[in-house]
Amino acid sequence: TATVAPARSRPIRPATSLASATVLQAQDPAGVAIDRAVEAYAKVRTARASFEQVAKQYPQSAGAPGAYYYLGLLSLNQATTAADLDDALAQFTRVQNLYPRSDWVPRALQATGLVHRRAGRLPEAVDASRRVFLEYPSSDAAAGAQFQVGQCLALLGEPRGAMEEFQQVRNRF
Image (tube, rainbow, N blue to C red; front, side):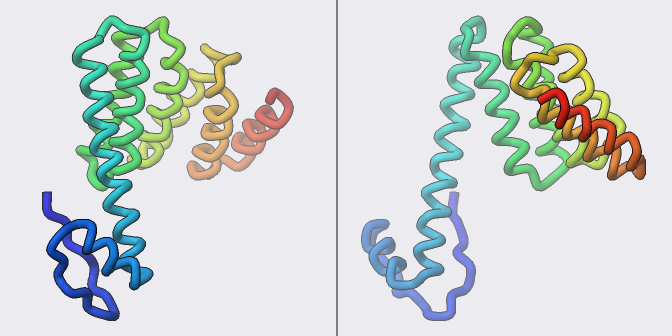
């Protein structure tokens, strides 16, 4: 996949190799930033491929729910369209449906709330997030989920309910 670099204040001579491009760009702060972005993008693509491989080759393993969870996070973090959000939601739903007894389910539910919030579906975000701290109160996702409920309630114009959720987070966790 070809990437297009943003315009620079100083033009960079075309490089004959990636190594020489890195040396040339290292002289320009924007070039250094681009190098870091390209490396991060490559790592994301590698991570996605690795998680997909685990989910496909080892669907009954203890690692499969985590692989689907992280695929969902990758999709959510890179989402720019509704389809991207739908993909993230599908991954989190897969964790819940295929591995209902997994320790990954509370995290997947909390992430489902994040997807709904980002998509502007605040009531659905509240419902998914509430499920986390009601059904899995001792999970590591419970505090974040309850805080998320407070944020959504505030966005829905329910400041009293939001404050109650924030107070409960403060008192319980």
